[in-house]
Length: 430
Image 1 (cartoon, one colour):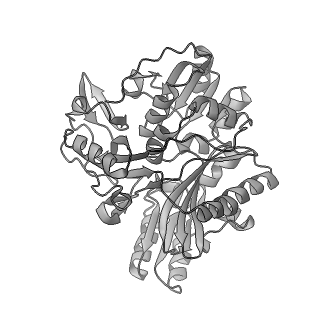
Image 2 (cartoon, one colour):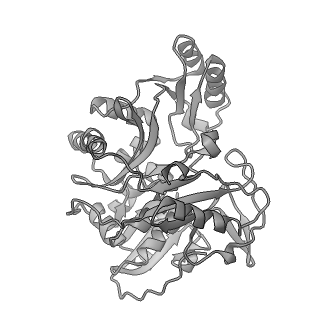
Image 3 (cartoon, helix red, strand yellow):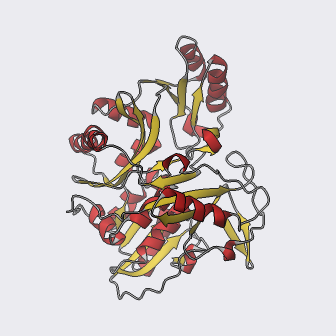
């Protein structure tokens, strides 16, 4: 189900990874190669992660229980995967208890959990982004869209699992989105206020960097595929696949570093925000250069699954130095290969994914395939779906065609009722 290995490093650090999705499975897999690792823990429980780390079923929003667990297991370093505990201040809480955390404190995490805060931060610090306005009630929002040109983009202010964005081609679609977001409250409090942006034409990519409070080290560029279906059709999802590296010209890379990441680090320094962790900038590359669509305060999913296999570094060493403000390198060593990931989802995703559907074929995957489990439950040896994005298959190769062939050949071996995946991941990059 994932690469088999037997590592016996007599390491020196007990580490906890918070989160039980495919991203966290990939993080745990990579950490197992660290010479600095003693014991690896994870929560909440994931059966596949439990095969490479000690996984426990503890609520990741119960900070007191997490702290007790850290004391019990003598955990010295915590790596936070998902955005929700970051948005609730887990880094502040654990750091106040003298436990080092990879992941920004609340003051930095809010740049993901509130699009209003992020957009206003970008505006103050001259970070290129789409023109926007904030609307606080449905009546005002409807009047606003009656007087603007289409298409437009409407976004929920808060966290919505990557689904709180709607591209509206006309007034009818805009009013329907406003009704869903602000009246029907499909995202609860997250869409109590909305951001209405100009529509940007271009192509998307994901830029991520390690930030230790003062230094920036870029991760290789990647691209994720957010729409549910081939040819970027269907609703937005948390991501249906990714590729790495996503090749761009050197002058564009320099522009991204200078206008996005260096302006970001200058801004957080000026505004006295202690930002240590990942900055993920979702970008639209337009004819006028890169524009930031969103900031995330954590690693992307499924981008992480395609990035980490290429990083030729001790991940634990790099993340710990980031968290402690000692990231004393200019760049990361990266393998000269390609990596690609395809997400397999359950029927009904993203609106109403079916759970409890039996999965077969996981034991038939080839040894060269990485299978990172997300929404899979093991019931007495029988694997069943337990959410929307069920698992991610990842492959390395000399080119993306090799990666694609490996992944899609192995997807044929997996079967469950309502299985869904995109068939065009990486096609244009072969």
